[in-house]
Amino acid sequence: RARGACASAGDPAAAGRGSGQRAPAMASTTQGTQVTLTIPEGAPPGTLLSVPVRGGAEQIKVRVPDGLGPGSTLIITQPEGSEEWGMKVGKVVPVADDGGGYHVDGQWSPNGKALEHAGNGSYQPVEVSSPGAALDSAVAFTVRLDTTVGPIDIIVRPDWAPLGTRRFLELASSGDLTDLAFYRAIKGCIVQFGLPAKRTWPCIPDDPPTGVPFLLGAVSFAAIGENTRRSTLFICIGDMSHMLGQKSWETPIGAVAESSLDVLENLDTTYGDIAEFGGTGPDTSRINSEGNAYLRANFPRLSYILSAWPLNWPPDGASGPPSPAAPQVVHEQPRAQPPPGMDPAGVAAFAAQEAQRQAAQASQAAAEAARAQYVEEARQAAQTAE
Image 1: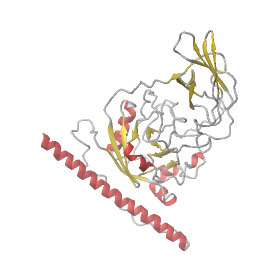
Image 2 (image 1 turned 30 degrees about the vertical axis):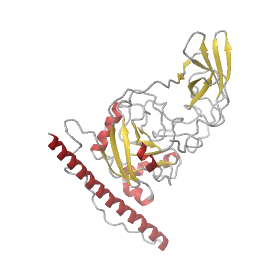
Image 3 (image 1 turned 180 degrees about the vertical axis):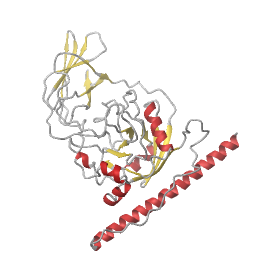
Image 4 (image 1 turned 60 degrees about the vertical axis):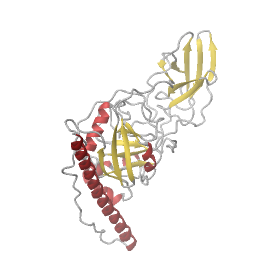
């Protein structure tokens, strides 16, 4: 299902497809077939371009190398008698350093960094489309996020990212994803959650790359570098395959179920990107130090995860879903009072925000009760089966 995508480099990602890409020039030589591809506008480094060859009978996929801007050329060659394609850099037009960029991991990497492979004639591997290739079948699990805009079921895939999926299941079953805001919500791009962390989780190693694209609904951990994934995740609410997937820690762990995709459209994106990246959204340092009180007071329209739990994954040694013998307790907080001196319109807006918070708190309590009933029924059914 196609949905909107980020539109420009500062917004905060650049569209990588359907942006005026020229048809590649192709020539047959005695040494094989050679294609000259001109990098189009709107295709920053890391963009995966689909290049038709042999009259469109075959598609090859080429990722734009670092340091190459629009107008640069890539020379793609298939030697005579070989099934392999190679690539070398032709003309180099540096990337304009306009301060734009896209960050999922919290690490700023400016555009226009040094070209890692000058046009020295060395060949680089090119991906060739293989429609028959399919992931090996494996057990999948479902994690349900009960949010303020509706339930979101996430199908997690151990065959895509075994380490990442296990950590996500552990986070959900331990209650660490309860009462968390989608604090970073960029329309057509991503929604991110996981702060403030309820505890410090150890980093997990990166999973081996599988080539699973970051399409609408893809779920992945955010990180600040290699082997630094902990407990912060994001969901793609648009096709982000043109921007994500080139770093070792950018590996989808699963995807939102088809039945929940419409719920993604209801997640609030009013505030956009976080303050660190020039957005009008929250400051993550304040989220970590002040918690949800900071978010509710300053960003009242944010959507929240009220509770989260695996529907069909027991922790090691358990015979059923994680027991909620002591379900997450929702401690009712005293009703907040408006700051002194606030005008009547401000007082009314503050009261509306507080009512929304109280309603979300009540909804969370109801969700926990429903979860407890679900697990108890499952336990009784298991005993009956035994």
